[in-house]
Length: 157
Image 1 (cartoon, rainbow, N blue to C red):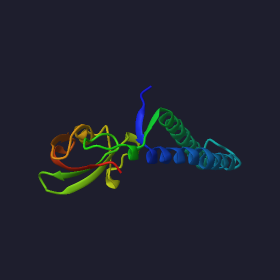
Image 2: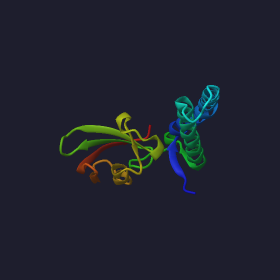
Image 3: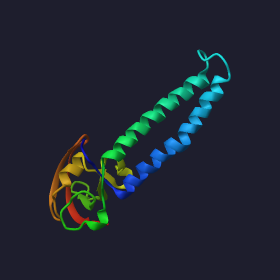
Image 4: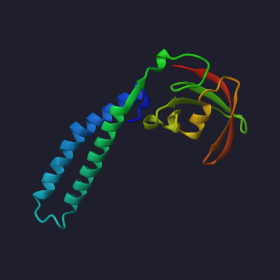
């Protein structure tokens, strides 16, 4: 059973989703199934089939979240420091082709969201950054082609 690194915020978000799905969604779906059953013939009851599908999706996600939470290794980023990129680091990069600056925090796979500046440690760019320092140039083979970045800042916030 592999441990999954994640920040405290990422862990809290997974826990919140887990509790919401168990305590809010599950009872709501059960009520929808009961309501649809009361309408009679289930073979042609679209509401019933829709509610059963929602129940299957919800229960599957609950199992998935339970697994993620059990395997979570919560890393307190505030206790980390240094100049080397590692899990939890907030890295400022300059794209060497466009000179555009981007800032990413290296986070666990389940909490990654590039649009909000959170890059997965398992992504091609995340893997390439690990172990590098300010001033290092990083070559990354991404699905969209090769990219070159220069690391200009590493912080642990």
